[in-house]
Length: 333
Ligand code: A2P
Image (cartoon, rainbow, N blue to C red):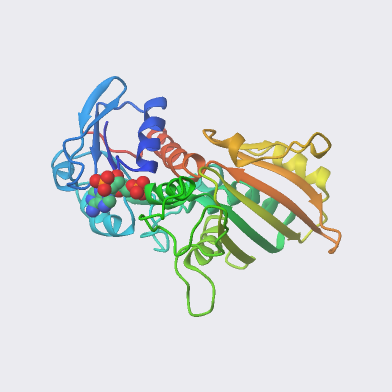
C-alpha cells in the first residue's frame, strides 16, 4: 500500500507517520507531502528515508490512501484530486465535515458508516473526538436532554504556530509569531476560531454540529464554550449532562468501563483525576470527576482529557485507516 501524508512536516502529520509506523498497515511506500518550502526534506519511516514532495508529485505516485492534515484550504483543493485517482482520503481539516455524503468518523462510535463509494472520510475536530467517545455509550444507555461542554484546549491544537507563540512568551520575547490575538502564556482566551454574528465561535459550532452528526442525533441540545489555555499538549473538557433516564455515578462508571477507548481515573480522595501532563503521548480518552449534579434530578458532571494530537487527530485517523483496510475498503493495484 502506498500512503501519502499531506502535512507531513506539521505537528499532526508527524504524529500520523509515527502512528502508521506502529500500525499493522502493509506500507510499501510512504509519500510525505508538504508545501514546496519543505520539498526535498528527508523523513525516516520504518528505517527507510523518504523525501518530502509537493501534492502534485504525490498525485503522480498514485497513492492508495492519503491522510491529510495541512489545513482546510489544501484539503478543499487537493482532496478531490486524490479522490479522482481512486485514492481514499482521510481528512483532518474541517473542509468536508459538513458534507452530507462525507462520513465523519470516530471508530468507537460509527465506523460502519463508511461505504465503498466514499472516497473522502472526515476526521472530526479534536475536542469533538474525545467528547463523543465518552458521550456515545452514555447517550445509548440513558438518552440526553441537554449537554453543556466547556473546553480547555492546548496550544498544539493550533499547530506549530500555537506552540511557538507560547514558547516565545515564556522566554520573555515579545512574540513575533502571533497565532492568537492576545498573549496566551499566563492567560486564558475564551476564543477558538472566528466569531460569528450570534456571538458564538466557529470552534463552538463545530463541536455542536459534529457531535450531533457522529451520534446521528440532530435533536440533542448542546451548549459549548471553547477556551484556549497555556497548556502545550492535551485538551480538557468539563461536561454537564442532563439525562432522559436516571443515571447515577455508579451506573455511569459501569457504562464507561465497558466502552472502548476509555480509561477512568477517578479517585478524588487521593487527588487522582485526568490531567493533560499525564495523558500526553497516550491514545485513549481519560475520564474522571464523575459526580452527580445536585441541581437537577437526572444530571451529572464529568471531566474528560485526551492528547489532541493523538486520539484528537492522528490516532483517530490511523484507526480509521486500519479498519478500512481490514474491511477491504482501500484499493490495491
Ligand atoms: P510546510 O511545512 O511545507 O509549510 P501545522 O498545522 O503543524 O502548522 O502543519 C501544517 C502542515 O501542512 C505542514 O506540513 C505544511 O507544510 C503543510 N501545508 C500547508 N499548506 C500546504 C499546501 N498548500 N500543500 C501541501 N502542504 C501544505
